[in-house]
Image 1 (cartoon, rainbow, N blue to C red):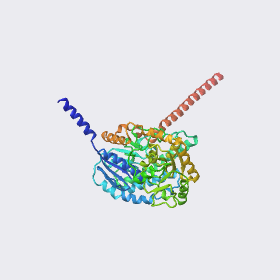
Image 2: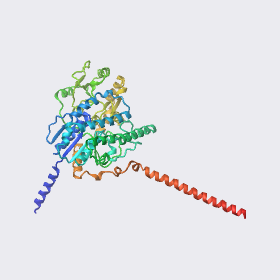
Image 3: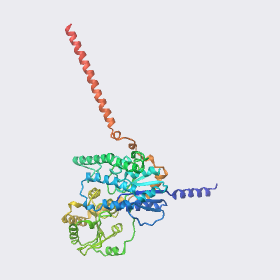
Length: 513
């Protein structure tokens, strides 16, 4: 064989290896529009790489792309419309949120397995090579890896936390790793550590004593032959995290935990002409106001809307507000409302000065990526902890929705607009986020191939997954040491007692003689 033949075969083998495609099933049944949009972005990336991807979500999808099939859980969507009506009505403490959302997760999973479209997919005899699943309140979906006998990759819209750590054996000492429901830094006071430890313990108990048994019951009600959930809940070796070191503090990560924060961001997309005209001609700059995909500004009480408009009327900047109704009565001339906004493209524009956000993970990632300072108006769930970290990192001001006053809101806006340190820190964080050897989109494609090619990549799993809870906490070792020391003390005490008794008897005997 000539050298040219060898070279040709080598190039051909490389090409074939790179063009290998897989059949991938991605499931995100969580009733969150932002998570649905992120899931769509992920499967688009994989479809572009040549993989055949089937995406299952509870929202309609109009994407038309080669290699991409969408399964719409219409029945699940209809039920969720009643469960999640208005996020401004949520007035719950962190412990209530943990319980209620675990409960809703079990109910939502049951609805998913009952969904006609989902049943049709399961009965179709379609074959897959890989499962990608978001396990947030959806642990029962992990059974699909058993059903299809395929490896699984976990995805989370957050950083590592109580909803993902147990599945990959990741340590999260509450002494310095804040719980997602608490807005603490890694340097906590004694009482903060006490509070953080308590909610972490409650979360673990809820997961192991309520959530996992509940999801196990759901699975077995549809698949009586299914093994116990503990036999497949630790099957994943890789967790893709929609987070980044630029927006969070350093915490422990197992080898298979991978940052992909910002994978949904597509640069250099043109703005719609109407919005472009507004932004190009805003001589004092533009402020973007959006509460994300799930929270609707139009559902706020009208009194609160008027307070916000009153603050906006005092500003010289143009305010573009994502408002879900046709019009906003009483809006000042510097306020423009749109039902839908191309958030990424607006944040990329040179005239953007400030982003007023709800503090959702995707919005924080986007504002950091483009180096735009923000004011966060957090409403529920992880938005408070996201906002707290943004303040700590120096590129944001933060107001909790329930503590809103027009004075606080105006002061936060003016402070962020006039103090150059906010913009400087936003750009510094942007530089950190962009400084990567490969893009988040390429990272996703790499790890999908890696897990499939290595049959699940079990070599990335930590041994903690094989330990029971008391072994992991070394309670058996502690018990052994305590019992050993107790027996040793008893033995020494007995020996001393015996020696003293013998000595006394000897002395008594000598005295009698």
